[in-house]
Image (cartoon, rainbow, N blue to C red):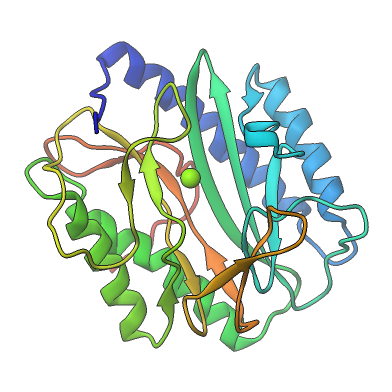
Length: 257
Ligand code: MG
């Protein structure tokens, strides 16, 4: 395993990539409402990403047929945008997007409410987002990678939910998926020591029910095996000597506690 350390020049580009991606997410959030199809969201996202001079990194990645992933309700990740998938009041939708800017990548995901949602769904979304922030308390030079994994899972389990195990966060840079892999659950080892200049995509995927998932016949969409709701929250971050820098956060509110 080789974990790349980015130079100041590379970091500067990744900051710009992250800002653009955050902006794309913010604009997509405004479009999420009952009646819109996930294909419409995809079309808008593709347009925006290209308008900023970026390439949508998901398009054709291992053959993925769209520019973003749209995963509704019990869909965990990798949902394929579809003109027949019309968002309904009460749904939740996880939008995962990636951009390539000047040869560098940024990757981030948000889960949104469609209109008014149940308290159950709202709680899940909040815990999922907060678990990311619990995890990155340990995303500092000198800490070990799997401290992040453990903190995410501990927080999620304390709320009665589970972290998906079959999919993990990852290093990111010139490639979307670089070393190291970053599980969202406790590991037997402590993992690599974190150093300034590492860029990581931390991405808890949280289910209300069990952590087991399966893949639909489209060979992409991952769903919870028990049909329970699932949420996803992700940012690309930079390890520094102090607090991590959240490259793709934009104006997404950071929880206070
Ligand atoms: Mg990712």
